[in-house]
Amino acid sequence: MNTDNPLVLGIETSCDETGVGIVRGTTLLSNTIASSMDEHARYGGVVPEVAARAHLEAMTPAITSALADAGVTLAEIDAIAVTSGPGLAGALMVGVGAAKALALAIEKPIYAVNHLVGHVGADVLRVPQNTVNGSSEVEDGEIQYPTIALLVSGGHTSLLLVRDLVSDVELLGETIDDAAGEAFDKVARLLGLPYPGGPEIDRAAVGGNPKAIRFPRGLSLPKDHDAHRYDFSFSGLKTAVARWVEKKQDAAEDVPLADVAASFREAVVDVLITKALAACAEYGVPRLLLGGGVVANARVREVAAARAGAAGVALRIPPLSLCTDNGAMIAALGAQLIMAGHAPSGLGFGADSTLPITDIQVG
Image: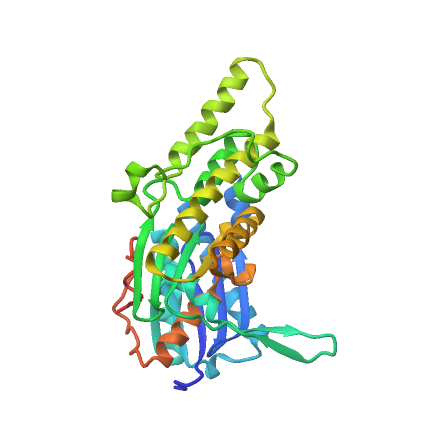
């Protein structure tokens, strides 16, 4: 196996997206994503059994497509990397089973890795950028340590202190109820907007006043600092929006959709960025990395850039295609483990839906 610049195929199936990516060292070669989002939209959220079945159907075509896009064969692959957890148990099992079968079939080592740390690993990737003359230049993706990482998605909202990607990741805080993306979905539903809620709230907020309604900022009061300094809570915010809308409807008044959407979104963004920058200040880390599907929200990026700049904190956001769940970030983390001299995981590991963030590699 090439341990200096390994060619790694990564498989990610923690939720509703079947991701297969291929990297060579820190260079992205392909990133194939097959989403089952449309199948879940009729239910207003991700249905675990539907997600698992969709992964089964998409896995072989996704692997074939990733190999073709990368211009490599299975025989050339040095190692397989796969998400072991956290995530939906059934969905994870499909990816783990596929990765083990593939590793056995081509007789290559396998690395079982943490989904959340994978989001941080996406930032090491160097993404070829096509130029007008047909040649390519490479965008540098080197991470500086330590860094604070804020990961925000439909299933996770976590604040991490990353001292070293492959050996030292500390969980500073996480959501104690709804994840931020989940709150977007639930508020979109009560406003009569379709699933997924993030982009719909974004569209509805256009022209709205983010200061029109002062919705609560969960776990942000001084009394919360000792026990929940870096934890998040969005359940109360969701309830506050529901009560505000109900009050308007009971009074037979029009609900100002744009103002409600903008004010809700502002409350979420305010809490996320305030806590992340507070962690940067407390730990003396002038770097903040954003990851996860909610980072696709325009207001999240806008506020993060403005407030990080004012605080003298360098902000890093991977390309949006690498922020959502994808196999390339898993391959990237696998490659980092190989280059750091870590042994393979073997075949004894399983899917772990509650895998702690400190378990960067399993097995």
